[in-house]
Image (spheres, helix red, strand yellow):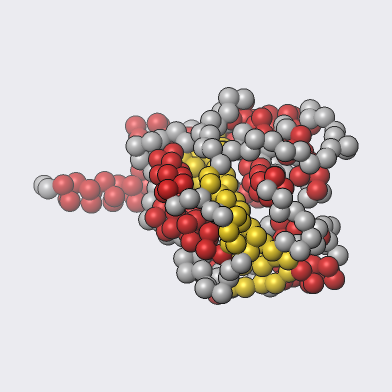
Length: 347
């Protein structure tokens, strides 16, 4: 018997019920493999539950800060951390977005982008900004409320539906989906926002002369690590000299040997960010200093695992609420978090 026959026998055994919790007469399945595996799901759910409880408890303990003003800090190109989420700068931008501070990496991304734009003098009326892969994020509404002129871009609706972005509310089909009434009135939004359908792998030549551009966890979905890096470089062509690009993406922070590539969601490593920074600096652009520290607080060590919210069963939906607070998570088995890059185009 050759290896192919061995594999076929194993597959038939698995399909025949080797991995079921019970046998054909509803008794516990006591084969050695199932005895090893049968508690993994319960352990994963326990990890999730207590991680979420810890995050919720820590969020409740945060001070209520109502008198904050924007501040300049030494914001680096860096990953999300618990210390960031506890900071005054994150609290300020969450307040501007009218959301409470919870320990979720998506909020960190929004605050990070706004902090970077503020520090580079971009949050002033008349400034032009270009958002890539915006989905239903709140940044366009907030930016237009300040009098900025914003071009919102996303995939064509048919392509977004094909990739599953519509069902998970990560696609902008029209300006109605981009508009957030709690952040801006409709007349102001319509006066300062426009929508374009754009393939991030082929940015149209007429998207130019912007003061800044940004993307929030979009470039890891372009098909490969190479395409994601190429997008970052190409995004600078949309900017004026001295313009600013702020991009966040997925960061495989624990495994320097292996990562996910050529897949719907790819995971960047330290070396990819370092090589990109070297390339851009050689071309005369400025890249904010790279900081790869993922933090050392409790929520920096909580690595969330599937299932994610859209895959929860009815019991979890009824009893666990609708928040999934985490800063780190396992993506296809790799411990990952968000990483932000700040790039200033050469003068």
